[in-house]
Image (tube, rainbow, N blue to C red; front, top):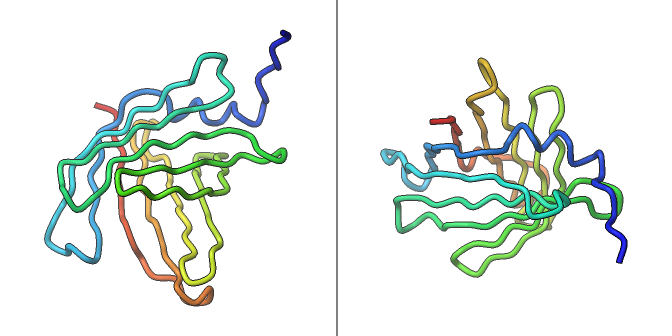
Length: 145
């Protein structure tokens, strides 16, 4: 069995490798900062990047994300401890990390910006229930310990 070469579209994901501590806030819990951690590592063969995220708050799910190339584009499959599974488009270039999902009544998008020396990412998830109006949802910061 011959092994397929690593897709060059995966190369930008190297910027995410390693362990990160996270801090997040959500409009549903305005006075709460949720602490957690996210670990990024290549699956054997480096064709899929795995992200495992955990939080210290019972109302925020732990998750597993698998990044890869599907239909010649970067994408991610999101799974969480609530039993949720969603598929998103992904891009990461010039220090900007984007994820998006168009789903009538529950579209989402994320914009994360690498700051300083690349050891921190300031991110914001937004949500649209009408595919016109976008509201801030989860604000999250990733920092390398």
